[in-house]
Amino acid sequence: MQEIIKNYVIKEYVEDDTELTYDSPLISGGIVDSFSMVSLKRFLENKYNISIPDDKATPEAFDSVNKICTLVREYLK
Amino acid sequence: MAYSNTTRGMYSDILTGLKDAGLFKQERFIHSAQAAEIEVEFPAGAPLKKVINICANNYLGMSSHPEVVKAAHEGLDSHGYGMSSVRFICGTQDIHRTLEQMVTKFLGTEDTILFPSCMDANAGVFEAVLTKDDVMISDRLVHASIIDGIRLCSAMHDTFKHSDMEHLEEKLQLHNDKRLKLVITDGVFSMDGDTAKLDKMVELCEKYDALLFVDESHSSGFIGKTGRGTHEHCGVMGKIDIITTTFGKGLGGASGGCVSGRKELVELCRQKARPYLFSNTIAPPVVAGVIKVLEILSASTDRRDKLENNTAFWRKGLIEAGLIIKAGDTPIVPVMLFNAKLAQDVSRDLYDEGIYAIGFFFPVVPQGQARIRTQISAGHEIHHLEKALEAFRKVGKKYDILGKSKQEIIDRYGM
Image (tube, rainbow over all chains, first blue to last red; front, side):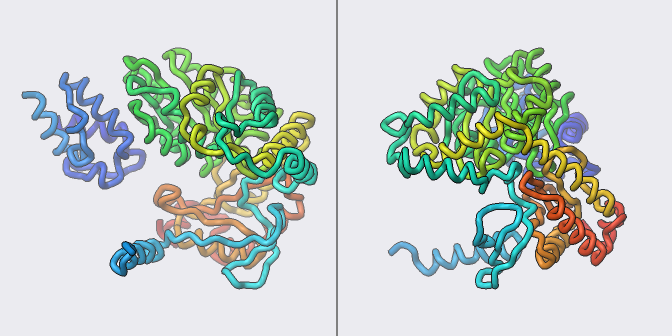
């Protein structure tokens, strides 16, 4: 899951040669702007067949690949 | 008094922080009318200096055009200074509707509604025509006023990579379940001076049954063979659902803006757009001035033709001098310096040489893309541009950036 999400973030948001780790700060680091989070949320919901409530899709919860994985696992249960 | 010393200190610290970060903006006082040559007091208290202005949005040189000034005087005499009312109470004059009809004809749309500014038009239009069941898909480099308008709207929002049509198509597919999809772009992008691929965007919008919104603030009056805008340039007149534009740039330079497009959407703005409902509209003398501007531009393409020739001369001159500019053919010509301090130093030295041009750097443009944004006008004569080129050559030589690659400049000055 980590690699799938990381690859999606790189393809979708990274427009230069910025290196990305599973803990790179995505929102607070300026890689993903808060406007663009919506496509990330929709990608996760489609990919894992889950529904993430809007109030859980916060900049903090989306701030790294690892944090996103934690969030997704919560709704996979 | 609630404004305690603690509160004052807190705000002082914020301002100090802006200064320390090099983000503190200072106004320069112009003592003359807006034109190719202006008299400037800078810094405050300094003697007046006559400089050539190459950073105004005065693309067609209409800001001080004698016929426009005369028309504004006549409008002031015949229709007064202000309306003291919003449009729908008792703030609509015959000339407001005349101007809306003239803009509709000029842009080739169905109807138009005036706003106090294009900032207000962009702030009000999205929430007026969309709901939470819809999605807005915007280019990642759209103007700040569009971003503010998007924030005020309850519809979902997503972005696509700048001018990347494959990415836009992916987003249209991703959001195909939404009631309405609105694709949002600038016609000409204000920082890079590049032009939206409106022909491709119209194709995609037709394929995916999406609406198309274009902000034409940096194109109305001079882009396209008769200056109607990017939609004329791209051969898609009549196919843009919503156009917003300003009267504060090419179309006179004073103030005001509008939403122009499908008549039902314009009518919805008249019923629901909050900046229209809760603010006075454009003042009568300005309306009279814009009407004259549109009359002049509809009668002849001389001014946009002169701007096109000036732009070609300027771009060629900068390239021949060995400077790096953003490719394109619009009168927005960024001279790339990459380093923020270098951009500020070059701007200061140009001013010493009698050339008024401003450095832009992060966060206004992305990190490492600092530049001097130059803007050409039909009000410039070739001798103005030759003098400005000479200044760029002199200052460029001082900093040893002429003929140097991006990497060489970055190696020397950093990002």
